[in-house]
Image (cartoon, rainbow, N blue to C red):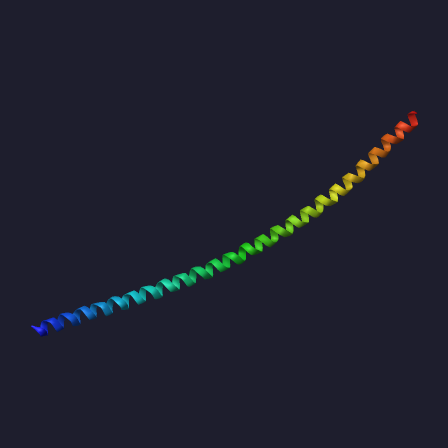
Length: 92
């Protein structure tokens, strides 16, 4: 009777060891997938960083153009005001 009990314990322990072995294989495969996904995300992050830097450069360039246009428009307004005063002075 004890022989059957010991054989049963051995079979159960072998089953537990096999379960642990398959679970460790699963965890290794999961770890590889995570490393692959992290590498993919790092590449995507670098790509997005480059796009963000390009967009910031474009915005800075556009802001410079807008400031230059505003400067020229302010000069034109001053010139127009001077012309109006010149007409008023001549009429008087």
